[in-house]
Amino acid sequence: MGIVNRVSAALSGSAEMDDVDVDASRGAYWCDDCNVCVRDVTVDEEGLDRDEAGTPLCPDCGDPMRFERSYEDGCAC
Image (tube, rainbow, N blue to C red):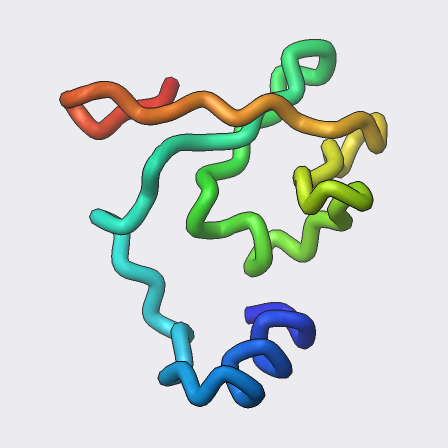
């Protein structure tokens, strides 16, 4: 978990979220140019930077990534 999330959790009184619930995923962030995909529940674990709107930036090119919701089968791929 990233430092921002740890501080936010401490300030809000939330429980630690070290064990990410796989079923909590709502989709994935994609960089179509680089073909990079990161599940929404692992963005902080991956250490991705974010833009001013909070959108994760591609680790390869630095552009904002596109969010795609998962389908009924649970896959956002």
